[in-house]
Length: 324
Image (cartoon, rainbow, N blue to C red):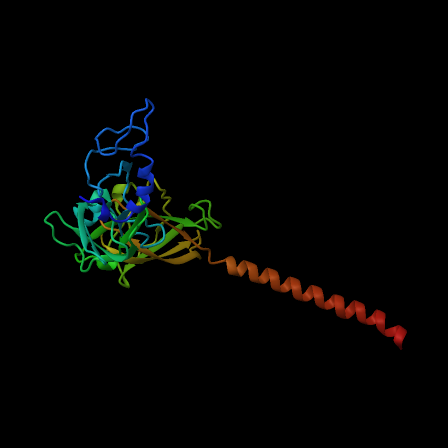
Protein backbone atom coordinates (compact mmCIF):
# COMPACT_ATOMS: atom_id res chain seq x y z
CA UNK A 1 0.00 0.00 0.00
CA UNK A 2 1.17 3.54 -0.69
CA UNK A 3 2.55 5.50 2.22
CA UNK A 4 0.82 8.65 0.97
CA UNK A 5 -2.51 7.79 2.67
CA UNK A 6 -1.36 6.21 5.89
CA UNK A 7 -3.52 8.41 8.20
CA UNK A 8 -3.17 9.77 11.74
CA UNK A 9 0.30 9.54 13.17
CA UNK A 10 2.26 8.95 9.94
CA UNK A 11 3.27 12.57 9.40
CA UNK A 12 5.04 12.52 12.74
CA UNK A 13 6.57 9.15 11.92
CA UNK A 14 8.10 10.44 8.63
CA UNK A 15 10.48 12.64 10.53
CA UNK A 16 11.52 9.72 12.70
CA UNK A 17 12.00 7.32 9.77
CA UNK A 18 14.45 9.71 8.14
CA UNK A 19 16.78 8.90 10.99
CA UNK A 20 16.35 5.17 10.29
CA UNK A 21 16.43 4.75 6.49
CA UNK A 22 19.94 4.98 5.18
CA UNK A 23 21.54 5.29 8.59
CA UNK A 24 24.47 3.21 9.64
CA UNK A 25 24.55 0.35 12.10
CA UNK A 26 27.26 -0.22 14.65
CA UNK A 27 29.36 -2.17 12.15
CA UNK A 28 29.07 0.49 9.46
CA UNK A 29 26.63 -1.08 6.99
CA UNK A 30 23.49 0.71 5.82
CA UNK A 31 20.24 -0.04 7.66
CA UNK A 32 17.29 -0.44 5.29
CA UNK A 33 13.72 -0.06 6.57
CA UNK A 34 11.54 -2.75 5.03
CA UNK A 35 14.09 -5.52 4.58
CA UNK A 36 12.60 -7.56 7.42
CA UNK A 37 15.64 -7.17 9.65
CA UNK A 38 15.15 -5.12 12.80
CA UNK A 39 18.46 -3.37 13.38
CA UNK A 40 19.25 -0.32 15.50
CA UNK A 41 18.08 2.37 15.28
CA UNK A 42 14.94 0.62 13.92
CA UNK A 43 12.33 -0.15 16.57
CA UNK A 44 10.89 -2.87 14.33
CA UNK A 45 10.99 -4.11 10.73
CA UNK A 46 8.20 -6.43 9.61
CA UNK A 47 9.26 -6.35 5.96
CA UNK A 48 5.87 -5.21 4.61
CA UNK A 49 4.40 -1.99 3.31
CA UNK A 50 1.34 -2.02 5.56
CA UNK A 51 1.57 1.22 7.48
CA UNK A 52 -1.61 0.57 9.48
CA UNK A 53 -0.21 -2.33 11.48
CA UNK A 54 1.92 -2.33 14.64
CA UNK A 55 5.17 -1.51 12.80
CA UNK A 56 4.92 1.74 10.86
CA UNK A 57 7.94 2.97 8.95
CA UNK A 58 10.06 0.74 11.20
CA UNK A 59 8.73 2.52 14.29
CA UNK A 60 6.72 0.48 16.80
CA UNK A 61 3.17 1.80 16.97
CA UNK A 62 0.76 1.22 19.86
CA UNK A 63 -2.68 2.43 18.83
CA UNK A 64 -4.88 4.60 21.08
CA UNK A 65 -7.43 2.51 22.90
CA UNK A 66 -10.87 3.05 24.44
CA UNK A 67 -11.86 0.50 27.07
CA UNK A 68 -15.50 0.15 28.12
CA UNK A 69 -16.05 -1.52 31.49
CA UNK A 70 -19.34 -2.54 33.08
CA UNK A 71 -20.71 -2.80 36.57
CA UNK A 72 -24.06 -3.95 37.94
CA UNK A 73 -26.04 -1.98 40.55
CA UNK A 74 -22.91 -0.22 41.78
CA UNK A 75 -23.41 1.78 44.99
CA UNK A 76 -27.17 1.20 44.95
CA UNK A 77 -27.18 2.04 48.68
CA UNK A 78 -24.59 3.01 51.30
CA UNK A 79 -22.30 0.03 51.89
CA UNK A 80 -23.52 -1.90 48.85
CA UNK A 81 -20.68 -2.33 46.33
CA UNK A 82 -22.20 -4.07 43.30
CA UNK A 83 -23.67 -7.32 41.99
CA UNK A 84 -21.66 -9.90 40.06
CA UNK A 85 -22.29 -11.72 36.78
CA UNK A 86 -23.53 -14.89 38.47
CA UNK A 87 -25.82 -12.89 40.76
CA UNK A 88 -27.75 -11.36 37.85
CA UNK A 89 -27.44 -14.37 35.51
CA UNK A 90 -25.26 -12.63 32.92
CA UNK A 91 -23.11 -14.87 30.73
CA UNK A 92 -22.07 -12.40 28.04
CA UNK A 93 -22.09 -8.62 27.74
CA UNK A 94 -22.53 -6.74 24.47
CA UNK A 95 -21.09 -3.25 24.09
CA UNK A 96 -22.31 -1.30 21.06
CA UNK A 97 -20.85 2.06 20.04
CA UNK A 98 -22.72 4.63 17.97
CA UNK A 99 -21.20 7.89 16.78
CA UNK A 100 -18.86 8.85 13.93
CA UNK A 101 -18.72 5.11 13.22
CA UNK A 102 -20.52 2.06 14.62
CA UNK A 103 -18.81 -0.81 16.40
CA UNK A 104 -19.87 -3.70 18.60
CA UNK A 105 -18.07 -6.21 20.81
CA UNK A 106 -19.29 -9.21 22.83
CA UNK A 107 -17.25 -10.54 25.73
CA UNK A 108 -17.61 -12.93 28.63
CA UNK A 109 -19.27 -11.10 31.50
CA UNK A 110 -16.47 -12.07 33.87
CA UNK A 111 -13.91 -10.14 31.77
CA UNK A 112 -15.67 -6.93 32.82
CA UNK A 113 -14.46 -4.97 29.77
CA UNK A 114 -14.01 -4.74 25.99
CA UNK A 115 -11.55 -2.65 23.95
CA UNK A 116 -11.86 -0.50 20.85
CA UNK A 117 -8.70 0.66 19.05
CA UNK A 118 -8.20 3.72 16.86
CA UNK A 119 -11.75 5.00 16.87
CA UNK A 120 -12.28 7.92 14.49
CA UNK A 121 -12.35 11.22 16.37
CA UNK A 122 -15.64 12.28 17.91
CA UNK A 123 -18.13 11.53 20.68
CA UNK A 124 -19.76 8.11 20.98
CA UNK A 125 -22.53 6.49 22.98
CA UNK A 126 -21.62 3.16 24.55
CA UNK A 127 -24.64 0.90 25.12
CA UNK A 128 -24.13 -2.07 27.47
CA UNK A 129 -26.48 -5.08 27.31
CA UNK A 130 -26.01 -8.06 29.65
CA UNK A 131 -27.07 -11.34 27.99
CA UNK A 132 -28.03 -14.69 29.51
CA UNK A 133 -26.54 -18.03 28.43
CA UNK A 134 -29.03 -18.23 25.55
CA UNK A 135 -28.07 -14.78 24.27
CA UNK A 136 -31.26 -13.08 25.44
CA UNK A 137 -31.13 -9.59 26.93
CA UNK A 138 -31.48 -9.29 30.69
CA UNK A 139 -32.41 -5.60 30.60
CA UNK A 140 -35.39 -3.67 29.30
CA UNK A 141 -33.09 -1.08 27.71
CA UNK A 142 -29.27 -0.94 27.56
CA UNK A 143 -27.32 1.11 30.05
CA UNK A 144 -25.47 3.94 28.28
CA UNK A 145 -22.62 6.39 28.74
CA UNK A 146 -20.88 8.93 26.50
CA UNK A 147 -17.21 8.72 25.59
CA UNK A 148 -14.75 10.62 23.41
CA UNK A 149 -12.53 8.67 21.04
CA UNK A 150 -8.99 8.45 22.34
CA UNK A 151 -6.55 9.95 19.82
CA UNK A 152 -3.26 9.59 21.71
CA UNK A 153 -1.15 6.57 20.65
CA UNK A 154 0.09 4.23 23.39
CA UNK A 155 -2.59 5.41 25.84
CA UNK A 156 -5.88 3.96 27.11
CA UNK A 157 -9.04 5.80 28.17
CA UNK A 158 -11.54 3.90 30.31
CA UNK A 159 -15.29 4.42 30.56
CA UNK A 160 -17.39 2.60 33.18
CA UNK A 161 -21.05 1.92 32.44
CA UNK A 162 -23.19 0.99 35.44
CA UNK A 163 -26.32 -1.07 34.82
CA UNK A 164 -28.64 0.42 37.43
CA UNK A 165 -31.39 -1.49 39.33
CA UNK A 166 -34.19 -0.01 37.24
CA UNK A 167 -32.76 -1.48 34.03
CA UNK A 168 -33.29 -5.18 34.77
CA UNK A 169 -36.17 -6.83 32.91
CA UNK A 170 -36.58 -9.97 34.99
CA UNK A 171 -37.52 -10.38 38.67
CA UNK A 172 -34.66 -11.49 40.91
CA UNK A 173 -34.27 -12.47 44.54
CA UNK A 174 -31.34 -12.18 46.91
CA UNK A 175 -30.03 -12.63 50.43
CA UNK A 176 -29.86 -9.58 52.66
CA UNK A 177 -27.03 -9.58 55.23
CA UNK A 178 -26.91 -7.01 58.02
CA UNK A 179 -25.47 -6.18 61.42
CA UNK A 180 -26.62 -3.60 63.97
CA UNK A 181 -24.66 -1.21 66.15
CA UNK A 182 -25.98 1.21 68.73
CA UNK A 183 -24.16 4.56 68.46
CA UNK A 184 -21.11 2.55 67.43
CA UNK A 185 -21.38 -0.09 70.17
CA UNK A 186 -22.62 -3.65 70.49
CA UNK A 187 -25.58 -4.58 72.68
CA UNK A 188 -23.78 -4.72 76.04
CA UNK A 189 -21.48 -1.73 75.45
CA UNK A 190 -24.21 0.65 74.28
CA UNK A 191 -25.19 3.55 76.57
CA UNK A 192 -27.50 2.40 77.97
CA UNK A 193 -27.12 -1.30 77.10
CA UNK A 194 -29.66 -2.55 74.56
CA UNK A 195 -31.68 -5.49 75.84
CA UNK A 196 -34.31 -5.81 73.11
CA UNK A 197 -34.41 -4.91 69.41
CA UNK A 198 -37.28 -4.59 66.94
CA UNK A 199 -36.54 -4.59 63.19
CA UNK A 200 -38.89 -3.72 60.33
CA UNK A 201 -37.67 -4.37 56.79
CA UNK A 202 -39.92 -2.89 54.10
CA UNK A 203 -39.90 -3.28 50.34
CA UNK A 204 -42.15 -1.04 48.28
CA UNK A 205 -43.48 0.47 51.51
CA UNK A 206 -44.73 -2.89 52.86
CA UNK A 207 -43.09 -4.83 55.71
CA UNK A 208 -41.73 -8.13 54.45
CA UNK A 209 -43.28 -11.43 55.51
CA UNK A 210 -39.88 -12.95 56.20
CA UNK A 211 -37.67 -13.93 59.11
CA UNK A 212 -33.95 -13.92 59.68
CA UNK A 213 -32.23 -17.22 58.97
CA UNK A 214 -31.33 -19.55 61.85
CA UNK A 215 -28.67 -21.11 59.60
CA UNK A 216 -26.33 -18.27 60.61
CA UNK A 217 -26.30 -19.52 64.21
CA UNK A 218 -28.16 -16.38 65.31
CA UNK A 219 -31.79 -16.19 66.49
CA UNK A 220 -34.54 -16.25 63.89
CA UNK A 221 -37.27 -13.61 64.18
CA UNK A 222 -39.85 -11.83 62.03
CA UNK A 223 -38.84 -8.62 60.24
CA UNK A 224 -42.32 -7.08 60.05
CA UNK A 225 -41.80 -5.03 63.22
CA UNK A 226 -44.08 -7.17 65.39
CA UNK A 227 -41.52 -9.34 67.19
CA UNK A 228 -39.19 -7.91 69.83
CA UNK A 229 -36.10 -10.09 70.18
CA UNK A 230 -33.18 -10.14 72.60
CA UNK A 231 -30.46 -7.85 71.21
CA UNK A 232 -28.40 -9.78 68.63
CA UNK A 233 -24.62 -9.43 68.78
CA UNK A 234 -23.90 -9.96 65.09
CA UNK A 235 -20.59 -9.24 63.38
CA UNK A 236 -19.08 -9.22 59.89
CA UNK A 237 -18.10 -12.87 60.18
CA UNK A 238 -21.53 -13.82 61.51
CA UNK A 239 -24.13 -11.43 60.19
CA UNK A 240 -27.89 -11.70 60.32
CA UNK A 241 -29.32 -12.94 57.03
CA UNK A 242 -32.68 -12.96 55.25
CA UNK A 243 -33.05 -15.24 52.22
CA UNK A 244 -35.14 -14.98 49.06
CA UNK A 245 -36.10 -11.33 49.30
CA UNK A 246 -37.20 -9.43 46.18
CA UNK A 247 -34.28 -7.64 44.53
CA UNK A 248 -34.21 -3.85 44.72
CA UNK A 249 -34.45 -0.84 47.06
CA UNK A 250 -35.59 -1.44 50.64
CA UNK A 251 -35.92 0.36 53.96
CA UNK A 252 -34.99 -0.91 57.40
CA UNK A 253 -36.29 0.63 60.66
CA UNK A 254 -34.59 -0.35 63.92
CA UNK A 255 -35.56 0.22 67.55
CA UNK A 256 -33.40 -0.58 70.58
CA UNK A 257 -34.86 -0.79 74.13
CA UNK A 258 -33.18 -0.87 77.52
CA UNK A 259 -33.81 -3.38 80.31
CA UNK A 260 -36.91 -1.46 81.43
CA UNK A 261 -38.42 -1.50 77.94
CA UNK A 262 -37.76 2.18 77.23
CA UNK A 263 -36.89 3.10 73.66
CA UNK A 264 -33.28 4.34 73.71
CA UNK A 265 -32.29 3.97 70.03
CA UNK A 266 -34.24 4.47 66.84
CA UNK A 267 -33.36 5.08 63.19
CA UNK A 268 -34.57 4.28 59.67
CA UNK A 269 -32.18 3.58 56.78
CA UNK A 270 -32.58 3.36 53.02
CA UNK A 271 -30.90 0.16 51.85
CA UNK A 272 -30.78 -2.38 49.01
CA UNK A 273 -31.32 -6.09 48.47
CA UNK A 274 -28.78 -7.36 45.96
CA UNK A 275 -29.34 -10.27 43.57
CA UNK A 276 -28.17 -13.76 44.54
CA UNK A 277 -26.35 -14.77 47.71
CA UNK A 278 -22.94 -13.11 47.25
CA UNK A 279 -23.95 -9.80 48.79
CA UNK A 280 -22.04 -7.59 51.24
CA UNK A 281 -22.85 -7.28 54.94
CA UNK A 282 -24.52 -3.92 55.50
CA UNK A 283 -23.93 -2.24 58.86
CA UNK A 284 -26.58 -0.01 60.39
CA UNK A 285 -25.44 2.22 63.25
CA UNK A 286 -28.62 3.22 65.11
CA UNK A 287 -28.72 6.67 66.69
CA UNK A 288 -29.59 7.31 70.33
CA UNK A 289 -32.96 8.90 71.09
CA UNK A 290 -31.65 10.62 74.24
CA UNK A 291 -28.88 12.75 72.71
CA UNK A 292 -31.15 15.77 72.23
CA UNK A 293 -32.52 15.45 75.75
CA UNK A 294 -29.03 15.52 77.24
CA UNK A 295 -27.80 18.58 75.35
CA UNK A 296 -30.77 20.92 75.77
CA UNK A 297 -31.11 21.00 79.58
CA UNK A 298 -27.37 21.46 80.01
CA UNK A 299 -27.11 24.56 77.82
CA UNK A 300 -30.25 26.48 78.83
CA UNK A 301 -30.01 26.63 82.64
CA UNK A 302 -26.29 27.42 82.59
CA UNK A 303 -26.42 30.47 80.29
CA UNK A 304 -29.48 32.33 81.56
CA UNK A 305 -29.10 32.31 85.36
CA UNK A 306 -25.35 32.97 85.30
CA UNK A 307 -25.45 36.13 83.14
CA UNK A 308 -28.55 37.83 84.55
CA UNK A 309 -27.66 38.14 88.27
CA UNK A 310 -24.12 39.25 87.53
CA UNK A 311 -25.09 42.19 85.29
CA UNK A 312 -28.16 43.42 87.16
CA UNK A 313 -27.32 42.83 90.79
CA UNK A 314 -23.63 43.69 90.90
CA UNK A 315 -23.19 46.49 88.33
CA UNK A 316 -26.27 48.59 89.17
CA UNK A 317 -25.72 49.19 92.93
CA UNK A 318 -22.06 50.10 92.44
CA UNK A 319 -22.69 52.71 89.71
CA UNK A 320 -25.88 54.30 91.11
CA UNK A 321 -24.82 55.81 94.49
CA UNK A 322 -21.91 57.99 93.26
CA UNK A 323 -24.15 59.65 90.61
CA UNK A 324 -26.90 60.42 93.06
